Image (cartoon, rainbow, N blue to C red; front, side):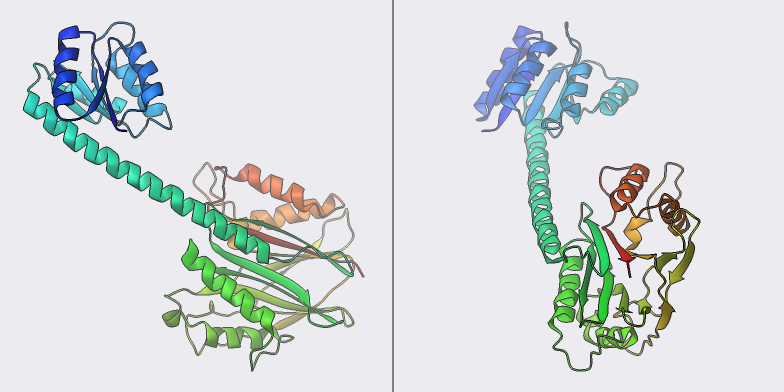
Length: 379
C-alpha cells in the first residue's frame, strides 16, 4: 500500500492537504512536527512526504536529512513546503536532499500535479532498485556456480592453494589445475574481458572444453598449441565480442621443468632460493594477443627449470590493479615486492597475503575478480 505522509505544525494546512490528497484516492497520514513525522515515516515507509520547512522540535531540513540518510527511506520522494522564494533557500533545500518544492499559499491543482509526478518517479526508482537486487542475486548465484567448478587444493607432490573472490559485478575469471598423467601437471588461469554473466559464460565454456580432453588438435602438454586451438574456437566475432587472456603452463615432475605460454595475461611469478632470504624472482610470460582477437595470432612457449624450494603465483589483474587513495594503482611491481616479503618470512601464507591486499583496497569488495593460485614445488 502506497502512503503519503504530511508533516506540518499548522493544523489547517494539515487538514487541507490531507483531504485534498484523500480525494485523489491516496492513503494519507499526518504529523504535527518533525519528530512525530520521523516516527510515522519509520512505521509507514511512505512513498512521498510533504513537509513544512519551518516547524518546532525538528525543522523540515533536518527531517529531509534523516529521511535521505536512511537506506530504506532514501528513495522516498520529498516535497518541501515553504513560503521562502529566494533562490538561495531553494539551493539549500536541494543540497539537503529535497526533490521538489511547494510554495505557500498552496494551489491544489499544482499540489496534485507534483504529487503525481513524485509518485511516478518513486515507482521508477523502486523498479530500478528491485531490478538491481534481482541482478545482484543472479550474479551471486553465478559466482557460487563458478566457485563450485573450481578445483580443490592439492597437497602432494605439488601443493596448490587458490583464492577466488568475485567482484560485486562478477567478472570472467576462471582457473583449473590437474594431472594429465603421472608426470604432467596442467595449470592455467583465464580472464574474460568485461563483467557480468556475459563474461562468466565464456569462461565456464573454456573450462569445460579444456576439461573434456575431447577436442581434435589439442595437445594439452604443449601450451602454445593449446592457445592456438583456443584462438580458433573462441573468435570474438562469434562470442559477442568477448575475448580473454590466459596463462597456461605444464609442469613435468620428472624433468623439473615448467613449459608455459600466455595470451595477453599478466606474467606468472616464480620465486626460488633459500627461504628467509631474498628470493630470485622470474616473470614468466610470452608474447601473444588475447584469445579471440585475430584468427591468425601466433603463440609461442618458453620453458624454465624448477628448483626446490620454489613457489609459483598465477593470478588475474584484479589481484594488483587496486586503486589507492592518491588516485594511483597499486600495481604489479608492488605485488611482486609483497610476494618477496612473504617469501622472506619463511612461508607461503596465502591468507596473510590476501589479508594484506584487502587492506590496500578502498572498498569492501574488489573492483574486479580476484583470482590467485599459489603453487609450491616440494620435491
